[in-house]
Image 1 (cartoon, rainbow over the protein chains, first blue to last red):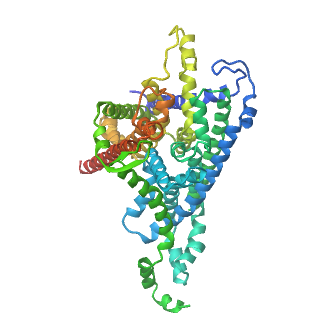
Image 2 (image 1 turned 120 degrees about the vertical axis):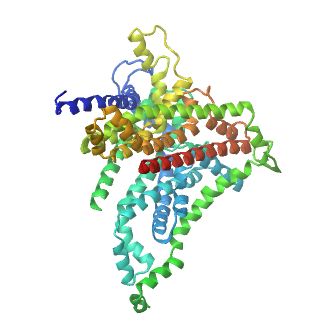
Image 3 (image 1 turned 90 degrees about the horizontal axis):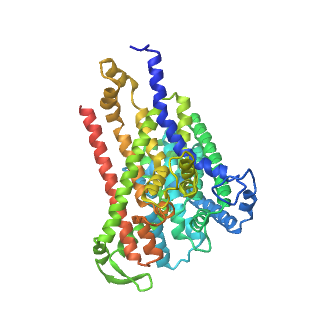
Length: 265
Length: 300
């Protein structure tokens, strides 16, 4: 039989082949977009030489910049609402509920099909006579964002020593004061991670925004959707590359943050 | 302040806080928000399914079961079957590709595991439309895949790959593959390697050790991954539209069309509700099977 030391190593290498194939599948499309964003040619499929000409065009495109502005407004608003509601919910669930109903209810929007939430909110807004616009998208995004903040803060709360809160209460602080002075500082990393996730999800969200915004107030994903639908220009490649860059930076920042929260306990 | 009495009986204070108004400031804002903007909208949709559409959109308050009956028309049954079939194919492909990936990652050293996992998740965090668009670029008649095949002399004329059901399947697989790898990895990584070693030491060949030890123990993760892929794949309407060119209609496309083109909101709501019912059934089935597997494993 083979040498026991070399045998596992050979098996080890063979096992990595599907992993590498998986990575090729996951990254080849992204790589093509990035490379073609530096293409000098008007033609999307023929390489003519290196150029940065499409990048300034992204920033000169009024529709794209309007979409970007709208997306930032929506993500900021939705994150603000979701961070407050989600943190309070997580605290309330952890301390005042038994059984899983409230927890399941608060996390449900994260699991509910976005399509259902989108048309449901559209129907509600139409029934109440609320005109659609950025405010309606903010409310809609805050719904699923609240679920994610709640889930993440709950997870963080599980790692907190309850005796500190008990000590605070025993020393006479009321629940609100205990929450503000003792719990909140300990929860901070979880809250920041939750807010970051909510913000990122809102930035990328398409389906719910598609149903709850006015045609005059598209978010960035909706602008991209129309661009892709009605004929692609090389400008989209440059925009896509910029968005990829932002996503990568955000994910790495979030990863650092979770590692920090994980180690600090 | 009445601190003195509380100091003496902290336990009483805690239990009274539990029953009193203390939870209100924490739970009420979020619960009211979610009731108004989640529970009521979904309830409203359920309500709409039993009423007639208005001539110019909206609703006529006249009770009817027509919307649910309409679902049994061959046209709509076909679309529903097609959506389930597509989601199923994508789920199986994701399992076939994702399982070996998760298995390989679980075998890496802890340091490389993190890197490998981030590399799987990273595409998932990049804009959904950007990733869809990338496949339009690749699969186009003049796109990279056709250029490569022509360059290699495998084909003479470009194959139309974009705007086919196969292209939709690839797009959906690409979109949701990370959702299969993550839960699979989580369950594979918990496996005690000594179990497999024990099987091997007792004379099982690697395949048998895998089949009798690793595979059953990773089944819950695989089932979770299948649900994570199936659910969004079935309700997606953007990929069928952009990569499929609108030629293959899925339930999501129908819902969208009922709201924006046909202006038949009650029927659109009925389709969306049916979709949700199917997805809930899938989740219920998954947890039932999963529970059975874990219990069976414990007994055996």
